[in-house]
Length: 313
Image (cartoon, rainbow, N blue to C red):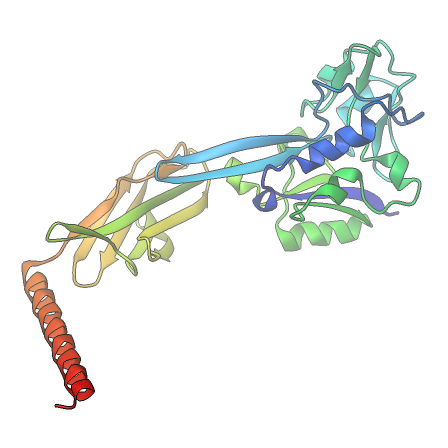
């Protein structure tokens, strides 16, 4: 049987909060009998965009993760109360009539996705806009409102979903809980993993230039893990590194300038290394100065020739 799943791409989310606003528009001041009472105007965020910052100036990565009810197959909330039901299509619903007064339901969710409506004395959460899906809609309001395609609703067989998960490297939040969520994330490493980044520069007799084309290699012990080439800003980054995985080292090789090794002890969080600077060798500086002078002389001679032709000399 086909069941509903939500796929969220962290890399595509821009923190516009259209998803959250669409949720408010659908549920504030609107009762959907059998699905939910009206959502309070303030306080609830059934679709909550969480922010996470990695690194330090000047290399910083900021990511946004839309977070909602995980529509778990093995949902703890369904075990906490008979007011909570998982439908055959996978959507978990808190019956707004049966859940009256059951404030303890809020603590039943390990993802903090259940909210308490003080005014109506009832526990509430995202319904995946089940009232719309049952009426023929192909997507909930949050997905419809997302301008970047960061949210995608899918009604597919479990086998097909397993194939998509493997092909797109999707993950779930807190898999150790064994709740078997139906909300999957792409590029979740921007929340869970670390990066090592830095900038390579060259001191040309007092002028600091970006070192484009430097070959940077990441090692752990004697094991070569990855290689990168600095961009035109001299920047490089190694990402998807798990926290607390020990010591690393970064080896930078710049043709004509030499080689440097930078140790990175005890990686516990993303790190932006202090700019790695190479000094131009004296003989290289002399050669570069001669080449510059020759080039300027050639340009001057070509300019004189053009002027002579224009005046007829």
